[in-house]
Structures are given as structure tokens and as C-alpha cells.
Amino acid sequence: MKTSFYIPLISLLAMAGCGSKKEKLTGVEGKSKKEVISFAPKVTGRILKIYVAEGQTVKKGDTLALLDVPEVSAKIAQAQGAVNAASAQEKMARNGATADQMKQLQAKYKGLKEQYEFARKSFDRATNMYNDSLMAPQAYDEIYAKLQGAKAQYDAVVAELDDVKKGTRVEKVDMAAGQASQARGALQEANIAYSERYVIATNDMEIETISLNTGELATAGFALFNGYVPESTYFRFTIPESKIAGYRKGQAVKMEVVYNKELLEGTILYIKQLTRYADITTAYPDYQVQDAVYEIKVQPGDMNKARNILVNASVILK
Image (cartoon, rainbow, N blue to C red; front, side, top):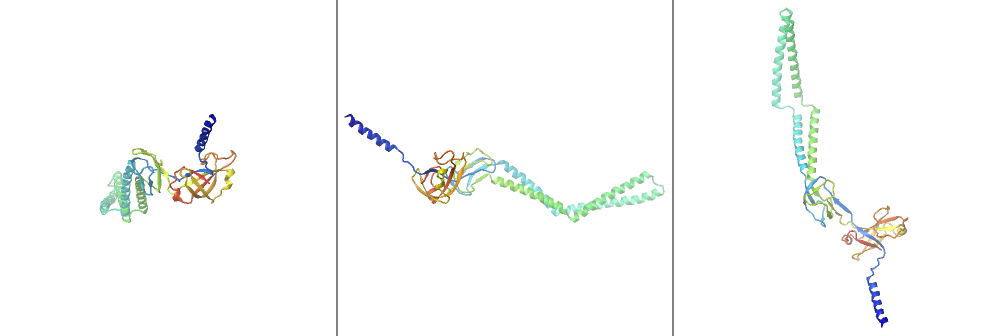
């Protein structure tokens, strides 16, 4: 009776043990990957609005977020004022004196000319009187000094009038034009910075994570959106030196995705040696400590089949 009771029990335990064993996967285990990309703002600002969500696929040119950058608005106002002032200086340098300025300058010339003529006549009379001993030397010197002063003022206005008639010097025009161009460049730079308040996708992307929320401060260069490039799926396998002879660049291989048993075909893009502390894709690779470790990158033959494979999913290289 005991024997007949234990034999079925042992059989059941054996059957249960066989049923609980996992299916052993043969081949080199690796991981599915996609090219990683991130988008960061070029200016620092507070996030006003986020237009996308995690898991969403965006296209090149889509607006991802809007930032508040009040400092840039102030710079635009300053740059606009500098442009207005510099443009006016350039225009004045090119056009020269206005009609009213010419009238004022001619009136000044006429008045100083009369003063000079009067001073010269006075000096001539004083000279005759001085020669006849009818004028003291001190008075004669004062009249001579007045003549020299009137002559200096008259010469100055003649030179000023002549300069205006010839027009503004080329050097002054070029200097004014350079200042105006510099001011316009500063305004253009400020406008470009202001346009950067919109975070724009520079290429297609599958958004994986959004680092900040609305209301938080996004600094320039900080990766605000991270994700993957669509149609960029590939597979990485870690091969020890003892087994690398069985693979070569351009070789066609077959693979199996572990979680859905999907079979794929691909081509080896490259084989490169990994450093000692590099990321080893294959779990527990069978290699000796002194062996070099190599990475194999495989490109799928049918991207339509590979595009929906989960990132970092286990894949078996047959």
C-alpha cells in the first residue's frame, strides 16, 4: 500500500518540476536600441506652456514649449533705441547741413566779416595816430589785439562754411554707417533670442520624458525633452573574443525578440572592441577575464517590423 501511494506522488512532483522549467534560449542575448535625442532651450526662461506629452511623436518644426523671457524684451527695447539714434546720425552725416543750418552759418559769416572789416579799419586809423604820437602804446596794443581776435573768428567761420559746402568727410560717414550697422546687429540678435522663447523640434522624435513642468525655470542648454529618433531601431550584442571569429561586418544574421517571439533578420553594421568598463549589453557573457569584449551592432532588414519593438527589450542573436 505504501509503495503504490508514493509512486504517483513522485511522478506528480517530477511532472510539476518539468513544467516549471523555463524554455532555454540558445544564442547570444542582446538589447534593442534607438538613437537618443534631446531638445533644450537656447535661452533661460520660465515655462509658460508645454504643448506635447510623454509618449507622443512630434514632427520637425512642431512647437514643444513656450518660455517667458522678460529680460530679452528689455534688450529689444534698448537695441531699438540704439538703432534709431545711430540711423539718425548716419542720415545726418550723409545729408550734410540742412537749409536752415546753412542760413545760420551764412549769417554768422556775414556778421564776423563785418566785425573783422571794422577792426581792420580801426587798426589802420590807430596806426596813423600812433605814428603821429597821438595815441599811447597801450591803446594801440589793445586795438591790435581786437583786430587779431576778429580775424581769428572770421577765419574760423570761413573754414566752417567751406567744410559744409564740401560735404561731410567720408570717414565720418563711414563711422556713422558702422555704428548704425552695429546697432541693427544688436537688435537682430535680441529678436533672435526672443524668438527662442519657443522650443521647436529640430527633427522627428518619440518623446520619452519631459524633465520640467509648467511654471518651473528652464535654463539654457538643459535637456527639457528626451526621446528617441523614429525609424532608428538597432540591436547591440556583446561577444567575447573567443567567439568573435564567427561574426563579420556585413554578415546577415537572424534574431528573435524574447517577449513576443518575433523573428527578425538583419545585417551587422560594425564590430568594435569595448573598453573594460564599457556598458555590456549581453547579460552574463561567457568570457574569460583576459579576453577582449566586442560589441556587434545589427541593423534590422525590415524597419517596419522593428520600429515597434520596445527599447531595451531582450533579443537573441541566432
